[in-house]
Length: 165
Image (cartoon, rainbow, N blue to C red):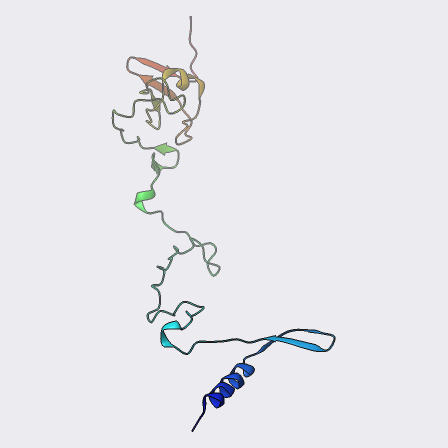
């Protein structure tokens, strides 16, 4: 049977196994004993958080559109979807269709943003400019078409014609 002295001796041997050397000074080794309670309520918390059982949700994949030209066919032409059609579509080379009319709410000049717009440019038909800005430009700022004339209600200006005073 173990005596209290034997159990104390066994405890010291257990502690001696847990000693960690700190440093050596002139051949002496200093150590510190680590003590740990064996009571279940005094257990030390884990150092790392527990790993979840289920994996985290994956981020959605990014799907990129196909390239317009592949290396295998560099001269292949692709069509433009109808949602990306130009504002002034071309019927035939050199001739343009009129642009669709915009709402009356957009009545500000797209160049100076001050005067009311409404001057209609020919041949493209864009009408988002004031008279002062329409006099200064020779190409439509929206579609870059060469202007031949502009019209604002009863006023019309035709470029390239002689005006006799």
